Every structure is written in C-alpha cells, then in structure tokens.
Image 1 (cartoon, protein in one colour):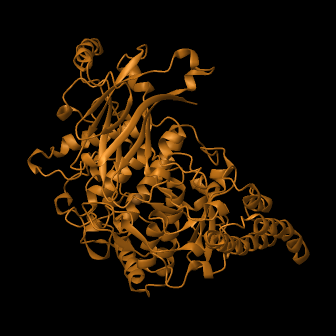
Image 2: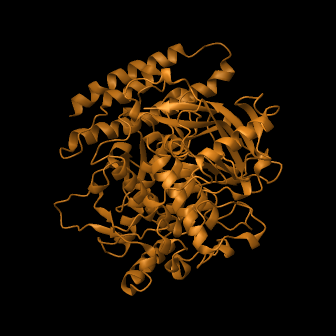
Image 3: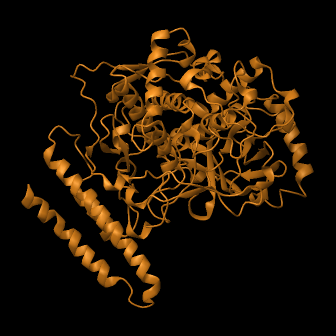
Length: 609
Ligand SMILES: [Cu+2]
C-alpha cells in the first residue's frame, strides 16, 4: 500500500514542478502572492488526496467510486473547470461580510463563521458511508411537526437533545453554535473553491445552483444523527414542517416553546397565521393580509407550479449547473429554492432586525431550530419531486461527474470529519431515514386562466396597441429597473429549431441578468399573457409562471453578481391556448419595497431537453 501511494504521487509532483516553472517570472511582486496562494492550495490538496487514497485502499465495503484518484490529479493538469470535481478548500476559511459596504441603505457587517481551530487542521477521517442496513439501527421516521404537539415523550427527547447541544462548548463540532455556523460557512462564501488553482479566490457556495438540495440533505442528516447521539437514541428523527398541507402551514406549535423557540421571528407571522409561500417582504399595509383560506389556496397553487408544471426538468427544479472557477460560475436557483425555500425563510425572519434575523438571512438562519424542520420538508419535497418526475433509486438528475463528484465536509455523530459527495445524496432510501407519508393537495391545485383564453386573446391584442410605442420597440432587451411592472413581448424561437423528440422538450422562460443591490432582499413574480390588473394577479392564476426571491445576505454572487431565473411554461401555454402563437407577453411584477434595487437584463425563451 505504501509503495503504491508513492507512485500515485509522482504525477502530482511533476505537475507541481511544472506549475512553479511556468508561473510568469515578470512582475515578481504581483505574482508572488498568487504563487504562494497556489502553493498553499496544492499542499492542502495533497493532504486531501492522501486521505482519499488511504481510504480507497483501506475500505473494501465503500461505495464503488467513479471518481478515481487520477481525476483528482486532473485538477492541476487541466487548469480548467471542465469535468473536475468541485469542493471547498477548508484551509481558506476567512471572515466574510453579510452585507457589502457599497449598499447605501445598510452598513456592512463582518461575519466570521470559521471555527477557532480550523477544520483544515483535522484529518479527513473517511469518505461518507451509508449506515449499514443490516445493522440493528432502525429507520428514523421524520413526521409532520404539526402532528407532534401531543407526543410528550418525543418532545422531551427533542428538547433535551437541543438543550445539550446548546450547552456544549461553542467550538465543539456538535455544539448548537457550530451546527448553525455550517450554513454560514457554505452560504456566505467563507471558503474558496479547491478545485483548480485558478479558482484560488472564487467563493464556494451551495445556494442558487444544483448543489442546493444535496448539500442540505447531508446537513440535516448529520444534524439529526448528532441530536440522537447526544441523547443515546439511534431512532431519533427530526420533524418536518409540512407547510405544503393546509393543516401544517402555520409555524408548528412545538417550535413556539422550550428549546425549539426562537425570539427572532416576525411577530405577525406567529400561529395561527398560515405561511405565505408567495410572501411579499416589506408589506406595510397589514389590512390587506388575505384570509387564511385564500392564503392556503394561493400556497397550493404556487406549489403546483413550482413542483410540477414549471419544474419538469432537473435544472428547473434544482438550479443551474455550477462548475469550478470563474468561468464555471452560474447563479440560478431552482423553482423550489425561490419558493418555498427563500420565501419561507424571509416570512419567518424578524423584519425589525437589520437582516431579518434569524431565518431571513443566510448567515443566521440555522440558529433557529425551525430551520431544520424547514429544510427537512424541502428534503422531502425533493424526494417527492423525484417520484413525480420518474427519478427512481439512484438514478441521478444530472448524469454529470462534475455534479456527482462535487463534495462537502461534515462532522458526523462521532465528531469525525467526513467527506460527502453529491452522488451519495441522491438515493434517500439508503440514509436510514424516511418521511411519514402525507397527502399532496397541491397536486390537484392546477390553476385556471383568469379569463377565457379567447377573451384573453382579444384583450392582449388591445394591449399590444397600447404598448406599441413603448416596450415593443425595446423588444426583449433590458436592462430594466423593476420600479414598476415590466411587460415585454417575447418572440418564441421558430418551431423549425426544435429537434426530434419534441414531446420531451420543455419551453423555458429565462429571465436573464437579474441583479439586486447588495444587502437587499428582493422579489418579483413572473406572468405569461397576463390580462388582469397587477394587484389582482396571484399564483392562483394560470398565468403565474414563477417568482424570483433573494434572501438577505445572498450577496457573494458569482461572476458579475448577476443571476438567471428559469421556469417551464409549456403547460401554461397549453392551458392558455397560446401554444401556436408566435410570441407571448411576459410581465415581471415587483413585490415588496425593494424593487428599485432590482434590475433585469432581458427575457428570452429556450427549449430544454
Ligand atoms: Cu435554507
């Protein structure tokens, strides 16, 4: 084993020597820092590679790994982000800011989520292994939180586990503090990417891309096992906040007391108010808060669009294909990350706090115990989405090694630092937990058009004349500031460009180059062929295609800081009888008080396989 390890390092050192020779010799000053940076990247990587090899050879029952050690070496040889795995460099942990100084509205504030003794000083104990199904450990059943109010035995256990966690020394990997900081580390850009030397200072982020669901699955999984370990109960399971069922929409009562309570929440959203999955932040006029029944209907209709109709393809549901380095950067959240994820975070957070703490901002969200119930439900919705869209077992949404071999690090219930890969996140059944089944009322909540399609056609034609001298001239190219609704006529690509296998193609509306002033949250809704007034428009109408929601603190964006939002519209066009039209009207309707901080570059249509 020792001999083979040595041989495996040969290519690494050859490349190291090459890198040193090839680094430009001119302007020494400038390059010196860069070179040191690269060197430190390489040496920290060497430690990881060593750990990787050791594990490969010492474990026989490990998952068959498609990412071989040679793939790891490929990092240095390619220098590009194509086809290589993607991970954070733990040795680069640094303080970051939650709000950025150039915001005229708010001051920046430094956030340091790094542990006092860095994780990079710890050995990677092993690669993730599933709990053995043959062992005596039973399946943990995650139940809907709103049904647990009377289960005293369970509540006592859950509260006790959280209490122990909160009293651990703050630097212990199992402490409540460190558990919450994980979100800050991976979401506020506290690590740089490890993938390529060229990416030395590109932040590693798990939101607004295809990493969102896999990362949070592991996060909740380890948190749950640690809680169980602290009370010596290997059946302990977290509850889930079942806000996609009418009875489960308010903040569950069990999170209103004891260790599960958090003071920093919006007081006007406490029970029995149902969650507003279409939440409009900064709404000052409380008098027009919809009745509970109406809010419930809105939530279900929105979920239908975000889970089914608008999310028929993995990229639409899960987010854009993030790759290493600046060139591989993308920032495009999936439909479910916009809402319910972001919208529910903002709805729970305390709007009187600078950043809507705790839940409304990334760095602080996981300080609220409700965070884990929120994310357990998202985890469950991912599993439901897979079932609905034909992804069974370990069939991946993206058959792409870059995604499958992307990895993160967590402390497990034994406080060992473990490396987890996206490919291991896919098949939920192997994790030893399951969700208690509930009805999915949103499956039947397919909305109806606001007016009969024939009438809508006439109304749109009349509007077309109105807009003739305005936006039609601007075609579909911005930029626009969303101070008011932007209405644009978007030409559909000619049918002749659609290739074979037409049934499988989804027509996708792409809102491009969304930029939000740093430090601000933002929301706008997207409608197709909207004929009613903006104030009457809601997700209960078939014309609703989706929304864009940005949480506070989600500012360490990718290159250029701009984002895309993609939503599927094939079924909407069918229901609006607009499937044969050459163009459609798209409305971006700003919601909340921060629209003047939101800009959009353009809107187009693409077809997605
Ligand atoms: Cu979250």
